[in-house]
Image (cartoon, rainbow, N blue to C red; front, side, top):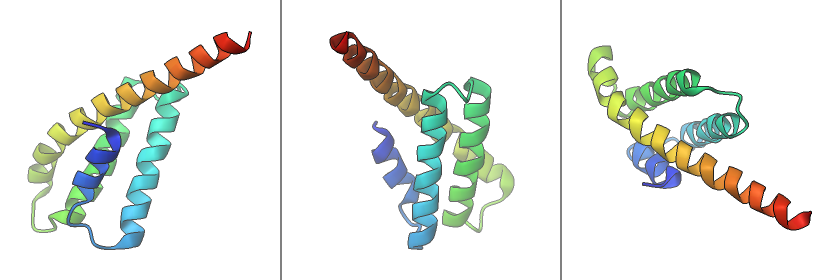
Length: 102
């Protein structure tokens, strides 16, 4: 599933436009940092877990922290895969474009 589709699915039920924009922007920052090599796998997982837990706590204010952690695990793995695919596409595209310019 694409990164954009995952973000939209995660934000389903979050009605505040500012919150939706902040969460989306934060995913963009995390993705960009990963693409540039500023986040390793551990830091990526930590950042995703934190952000997804925040989003889920907004969507499900009645859930306990343990319930939110359980819910977030699947989301984190999906986002990690999507970010890796996005990073691969960006890096490969940049590499191919550099080769053409030489």
